[in-house]
Length: 623
Image (cartoon, rainbow, N blue to C red; front, side):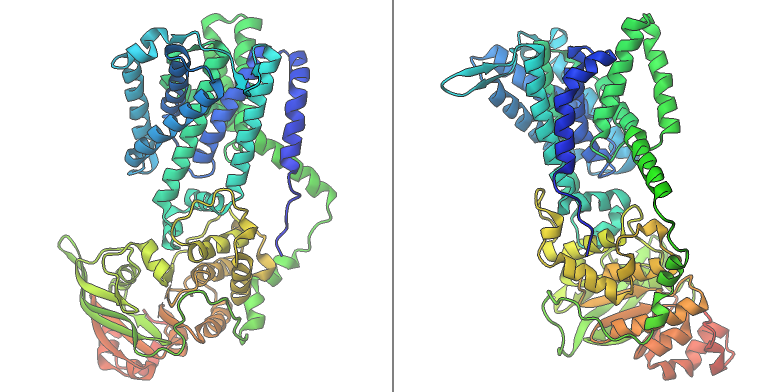
């Protein structure tokens, strides 16, 4: 069973730290205003950390939402008769979220550096709009003065937060609420999928998840955090400044998160504390004048270079170092035994997995039919006019010389690549125009020739990502549901781990697995989706002879009661596994037949051996 953390320990420790902070930090040189400002920057940083640290989306446009939410709340409180500051904050947050949704629809059409550059451009557009077309509402370069301090209208009385300490209580409360909500999100199924998108978005999509939908959702959440924090800034200062929209504001958010450590949620708090303390120290204590920014920039570079995972990461590393020093050393044989596990199970019995998809056992006839499948890349023809059919419960092998078009053919079958012509019918449904996530949702899943794993996560988390696609569907915003409470998740993960002999490694980070274990996990990810048809792309690639023997035994146990198509260059192993073989040459079907028929076929011998008609030449895995 998975190890469970003690509930609410993080929340309780955070609450105690927030209670102690206004009494401890002044003795360390922090002014009350700086302490309140830290909470505001930390709150906007939580949203950015969800976006960047957990999802891998680097946005330089958070200032647009920070300013939008803050300006809307300030406009309500200064330009209308609105007096309820809490409602104004919430309305500003909603407006920032709506703007974030619209911006996300545009920005998330691209990835990587292109996404980041789009967010920069959008931030500059918002800055221009605030200073020019909307200056009558935003005050332009003067901002909006007269923003009231926070209040809480209870009907029978109104509580005013108009002193530094009372304002701290108000800000600390909302920071705590924001942190708790973020913790719930990252512990939810959505939180695990966000990390999957960060580590390997294409594999997350291939496992049946709508990665664009989840990216857009977290983009909106980050915008709402920024908008709420922007409203708090205006109330703290009594003035909503125009520089909230500036690119420098987005830059500070990024730098503070980098200093504190991305992917921890607490990184923005430590980063904001360090950044604002040093800013005040260089300006007021050391009186550096205009050079304080240069010195702070040098400090930032040093922190990022020497603390690559930020302050929180350094603290965690130190904790583990101390803990390892006290703990007894693990026997070196543990990893070796785990890596060799399949050898002891080469004749293992079939492990039953929970059946959730429409049952296919007992069905007859084709589960997959391909007609006229063609793929052209300009003048290059990868596949041409392929007709192909696989029956329910069949084990089919596909072989062919290098460059025969096997990988492209597999990619078209799983809807990773759109065919130029032809038709693919899976279980009675035409899937030719579907996406890879939709194909997986229907029960058509593939394992990859080169491992496509989530290396920064554990084996359990990898299998859970795969299982969630089938258990929850393509897209579900269960942001506050506990991951262990997803019905059927633990049995699905544990039965899959047993099937690929990784039960003892469930809580091991993938980066620590041996190569053979990673290959088994690669197969396990596909199995965890409960596929009706499983495609294995060179499952024996890169293995030693001993690992190949063990994995063949594993595949035999997996094959019982399942429909599978296997590509591999090890012909001895492939012929031992499959019932029929399809041979591709130059993108076409050359011949089909039983393993014995293929071994003695003159056309196949010509394709592989240039006309040397020796049946025994196949032994040893020529390809």
